[in-house]
Amino acid sequence: MSIKGKSYIIGVYEHPTRLATDKTVPQLHAESAKGAIEDAGITKDDIDGYFCAAGDTPGLGALSMIDYMGLKLKHWDSTDTGGSSYLLQVGHAAEAIAAGKCNIALITLAGRPRAEGMATGTAPRQPAVPMPESAFEIPYGPATANMYAMCAMRHMHQYGTTSEQLAWVKVAASHHAQYNEHAMLRDVVTVEDVVNSPMIADPLHRLDCCVISDGGGAIIVARPEIAKNLKRPKIAVIGCGEAPKNQYGGKNLDLTHSGAVVSGPLAFAEAGVKPGDIKYASIYDSFTITVVMQIEDLGFCAKGEGGKFVSDGNLISGVGKLPFNTDGGGLCNNHPSNRGGLTKVVEAVRQLRGEAHPAVQVRNCDIALAHGTGGSLGTRHGAATVIMERE
Amino acid sequence: MADRKITAPQPNSETQAFWDAAGEGKLLIKKCNACGEVHFYPRANCPFCFSGDTVWQQASGQGTIYTYSVMRRAPVPYAIAYVTLAEGPTMMTNIVDCDLDGIKIGQQVKLVFKPSEGGPPVPCFAPV
Image 1 (cartoon, each protein chain N blue to C red):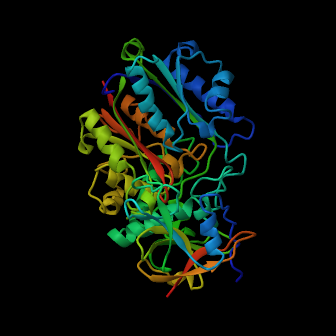
Image 2: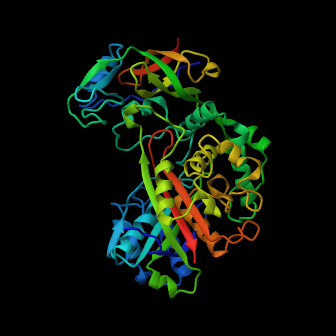
Image 3: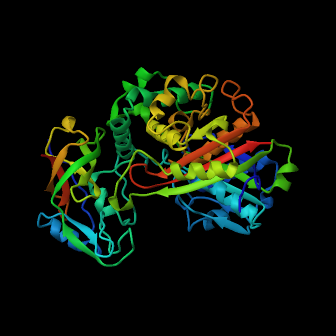
């Protein structure tokens, strides 16, 4: 069964907060849901499906949040793949709708790591419950930054990628973020600014890293009949793919590719389009290297050519061939709950509707892609790709 | 400069033998008697063929750096790495007892153990 064209994204919302000192996480979920409901022009009681990630919804899976928001449902799913969860959940919602399990599905994300002072990319994370690999990784100090740094180091060794090439990803994001009044970092930066910023974990500099922010967001996916009766642009979900990548027992470990090598082709095949058809791409940008690897793995360029591809403004809207993350992305705008997948869909929908900031709006944007990874490119992660089309 | 404090690994019934051996200065990996593959980190069941007939094998302690990164934003900078063992599997580790600025991908390294805080010593590697 294909999900192509069997559901539409009818509502999106990005919470404007970046520091939620006076709000709770459930409140941020609910406020995000409310924003998407209003954007779609439906009511809360129209929603009969709910999708979230267990890791950022307090309680047992989705149950507490379903109770808190007073949802009456026929279907739900709280699969957690980290930051890519919400991309994966667009696919799961599309599947559920195509199978007749629900009609209107709500997806939410929220978190306040900044207000709680708990989030950092440089301190090793301690899992509350030991994972099977914990004893063989935690002693060595795996933080977030140094795991992605090891991918970058290997990519540089294997393909000749340079710090200057990685810096172009941040430069492009900053060019877009200057127009976003909610973005945390709105100053346009140069390649020199990035490579001269303090080294965090070799070879990644401070400006190679994304921001840490509070916030949230929501997406509403619905059956075609419902979407067609709403007074909003029609954004069809035409292809989805998902894939985990693991360490394969330590055999032939390759940190230069991501799960996008599987999720990307699945999504493109279902959508019946090619990378060259994509007018705008939201690409998960936890770090600059994340973007380079995923652009290669999705087929926008050959493996190892990502550094050259992102250089010279090729990701800047109105300048380059592949406008990306026109809200400023995780590198400049926000990274709510350390999970950037939901906002990737939101900006793609803005682009398809023609509702992005005029300075970054892509002309004739009819097909867009949103892609992310969750977990760590340096160990194990879940990749998810969503391709959308404006009708 | 003082060494970084290493969080103690928590042995369990699947890995107790590994950590007991570590206490004696030996690095063990798992080999599957059914398919012949070796793997790391060690599991009771082979991640390749799912056979439960896996046995411990002592690694030579020789390896090559697959990749690494020096964490600068830490009280004591340290080098995390993946080292490919001579026996095949690649494992996460630290590169120790060296100038952190001199580490290179492809470098030959050898096994050394470093004490953890209140737990068994953990396998690390130093340039040959």
